[in-house]
Length: 152
Image 1 (cartoon, rainbow, N blue to C red):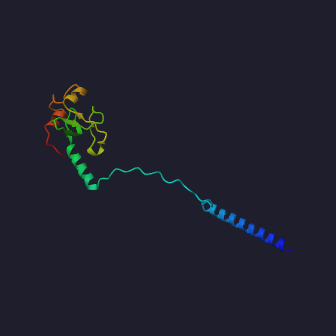
Image 2: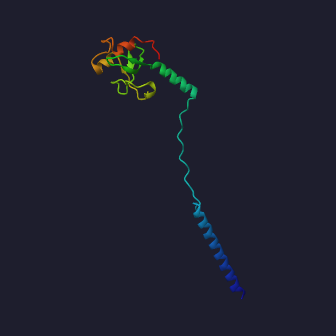
Image 3: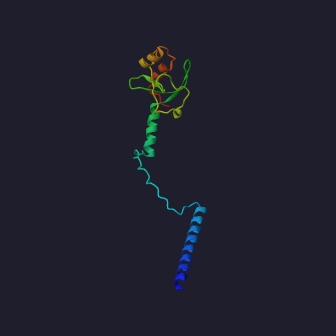
């Protein structure tokens, strides 16, 4: 008679464990967690970042760059606000993205200097427009050349 009682106790114990585990899984699923552990792949190795300049050196670089590219509101015939520079050879160059047309009406802060391909007065201007820009004393090239020391 002992043997059937042991079997009965074993069946009851297994049933209690099964019900308890099922209840735990159901509760875990109710809160959005799985009873099965989640193993994720390790994150990909990070790419090395370039060294970051400190804020002061970035501001100094921006101030130096701005000093080389002043803006001026030129009169007609081809006038308006223009960001330009004077090259070491003395030829003015306007801010341009395509090397052919100046960025008229754009302030220094609106220009993406990483994309810049300046239009240089003189031979480069002649190749694109048929004139050097110095023939007309009112042309921006002639006026900018007289402003070598101009900083704004």
